[in-house]
Amino acid sequence: DIQMTQSPSSVSASVGDRVTIACRASQDISGWLAWYQQKPGKAPKLLIFAASGLQSGVPSRFSGSGSGTEFTLTISSLQPEDFATYYCQQADSFPYTFGQGTKLEIK
Amino acid sequence: EVQLVESGGGLVQPGGSLRLSCAASGFTFSGHWMHWVRQGPGKELVWVSRINTDGISTSYADSVKGRFTISRDNAKNTLYLQMTSLRAEDTAVYYCVGGGSYYPPYWGQGTRVTVSS
Image (tube, rainbow over all chains, first blue to last red; front, top):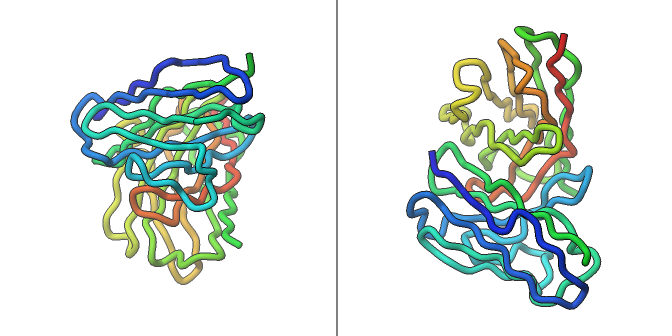
């Protein structure tokens, strides 16, 4: 199975900050990567597909990049509603696998 | 409006069985792969299973292979997950997910499964 490793596991930041979350795959997954946002008690929400595609309705301050084994999610200017947990997920092969999550907290 | 509504969760003893259902509406259910994803208490997301549009092709996480069966009824716009030989580690919220083969954007609200004696 492909292992997905996110870093950091948690990060504290302030409104207006730029934040980057990294995701590493244990093998080459080309661009088959998604990013999800999850708030407590809620279902995850798809933010980014195919490594850099912005899902409809998602603010443009969210962006994704990378290919192969190294990927990043960037939030250009944090808003209060962005404090949540973020997951990467590979869609290259079954079983699909998620990263362990990165919790974004208010500083 | 897209809706995925799960049902069938509950408390079950180790070794028991449950069948989860997911009623879909607001999109062309029969045209999309569907998935089950679970999340244990305070834990990360874990992909469980996927089924293709006609129900012929399925895939499973190693942890559930041989115990869980995913199926669908396109006439009823409903997805199922039959779970047998349940273990404590299967305790989780189970999400029905769909609307895109590789990057499904639609998630249900989840149904809670607790395996305990």
